[in-house]
Image 1 (cartoon, rainbow, N blue to C red):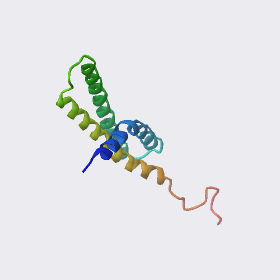
Image 2 (image 1 turned 180 degrees about the vertical axis):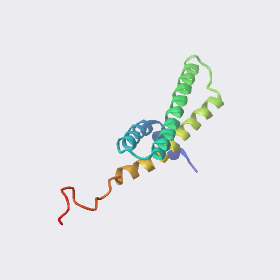
Image 3 (image 1 turned 90 degrees about the horizontal axis):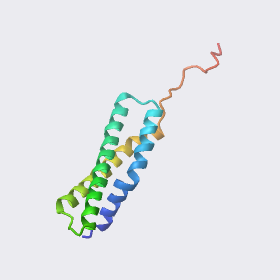
Image 4 (image 1 turned 135 degrees about the vertical axis):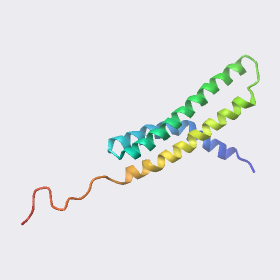
Length: 120
């Protein structure tokens, strides 16, 4: 079975889409004044995305320098880069799930009487 399509999708989600999702979801959760638990979960998942992207791009720079110098990139660096992209992709999907919930629900509750007062 050829996993090229799967690895390409993971790369796109983990590296290209992840920063946009982090900014949008984190802003949405904080702006809608969600519970401290929701903000904490969003913060942890956002930190996982940011941390894994930092590791990925740092290792990418090291691999680029190695290739530029004529050396071969070690399998450990290549494997760690793949793991970092995977962590970023999984964290992004987990982060997008509460993001959809924030976008589709509102914390406003209906008042029992109209805002202009009671009819009685």
